[in-house]
Image (cartoon, rainbow, N blue to C red; front, side, top):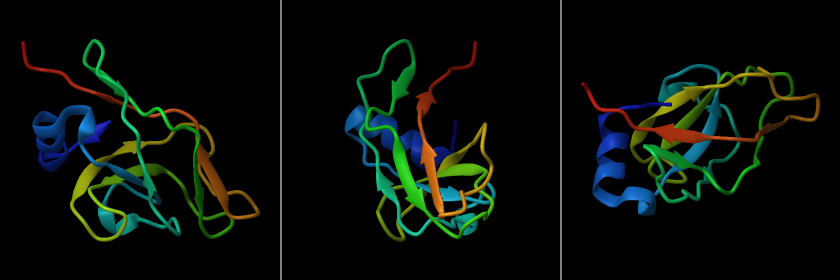
Length: 113
């Protein structure tokens, strides 16, 4: 997952108590958000440099057949600070009913050698 500096700061300052919201987007920038609403994430305890989102699956709605290529991370349910993104694998569009589901999401931290 590509967290930007704001997202890394949130995790370093608050650990798994940091507040994250996810949206679906058609690209990796905050302006690409196309889901109708953001979903609050529940973060599990870190283990081996990985924080796993525990309230999956995450259910989103949007325009039927619209591109769904990235999970976008924010600090709030509306507006807020953009924390970064993760490219999605698998289905790359909302279904015919305008639904999209994320079944797994992790945040991995690394440090330079």
